Amino acid sequence: MNSKKALIGVAAVLAIIYFSLFSMATNGYGYMGYHGYNSGPSFWYWGGTRSYYDRSFRSNRLNASSTRGGGPGSGK
Amino acid sequence: MAYTLSERHKHIQQPPEQPPQQPGLNLGTLASLFFVAGLVSLVTAWIFSFETERVYATKAQPNNSGVFTEAGPITVRKFNEAYHIELEAYIGEMQWSFIEGEVLNASKQSLFSFGEELWHETGYDEGHWREQNNAFNMDITFPNPGTYYIRFSSESSQLPRNVKIKITKRLGSSLPHFWFGITLIIIGILLNEVRNRTISRVVGSLLED
Image 1: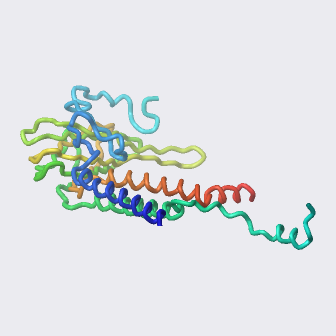
Image 2: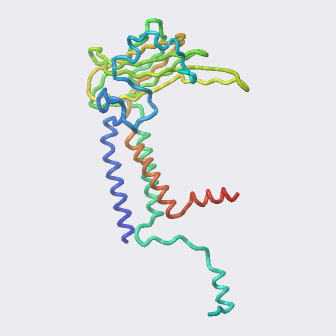
Image 3: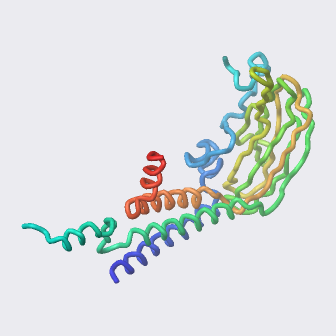
């Protein structure tokens, strides 16, 4: 009987956490912009590309990368 | 004290030791509960990644001037709406292209930028090989309602033949339920291991073989 009560208690706690996460999910938690535009995406966010807060990553650096090239050997 | 023959026989016939039963919580049931809750949470995370509205889709041709297309207006109606941006470029062999998206507000002021270097390389050592990274994606939460634009520009060794861009509105962020689900499944695996030692047995039998 105690075991059953404990299981129900654990299930209730998990359900409370699960439903409380809906508020974060519907508010776009973790993506770029959620904490403002100057702080980047959350630590938990992966898979997206890099983001920069300055006006433009390569503005005023015309042809900065043209001598470098890309690919796996980039920077070598 | 000496055993009689029948008593010794009883000892030999004893079944293999079972793991001790927990007097309180049944760890096997608890592990199952965590597994099921974890799976439900992962499915919920997947549902939150559903596209609810296609906002913009185009196939653009980059040019030498840098900026090659401006996506928008993207009308954000509510606070904290989540959007997903997918970009795919055709990069010629042994070429690279840095493609950047710059997010602008209604008065075309820059908010932030995102971008990635896309490349395509081929070669020959012990056979022909080809490696490329020709796509990237980005998730954005617009904290305030309003009108936004995304200006795309590129710098390339040779201009990409075309760039496909798709912007969609999402139901929300899948991150909270995804990580909650992963955590629950890991806890479920650990509880099952304490109770049944499934992984230890499988690893043990593999090592014996």
